[in-house]
Image (tube, rainbow, N blue to C red; front, side):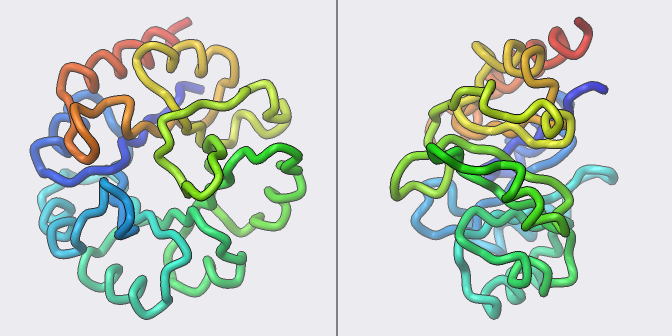
Length: 208
């Protein structure tokens, strides 16, 4: 199965349209204020309203208050939630939206057990671990830590770029890959050339 692609950290409509033209299946919007890729819900709502059909919009939160999440969903009308904090399954399930749960690959993490805990999620996203940073580190992790039985269903993130995404897809064969910093000119601002190079490498790996 060909790996799908999510471009995260979208803050401008022009970046969204470039990503879609290149082949993105999903766009991510970061609603975590400490992040340099944070986007105001009203801005995200305007971008989402201009997207073509069949593109999934994803809202990223980190240990946010339910009232804020509900307000953001009402305004932005995103399709999918992505939780990057310590949210419990019960917390994630309360918003009448499908969700994916991000897990940071901390040493000793029992992935199979965590996947069982979050069995109500649409997918598990795996990201690099860096103390005190909930995501977007720009760092990768050792992909051979992922159990083979899980690989075809996970979303692989963490330090991906045109330089390593083909290797990642060929080695892991994930359901999807998620990239943010690897296709940027600066945090929150995408680079069209980097996006296109990234997709060329994805296509190369998918065709092997």
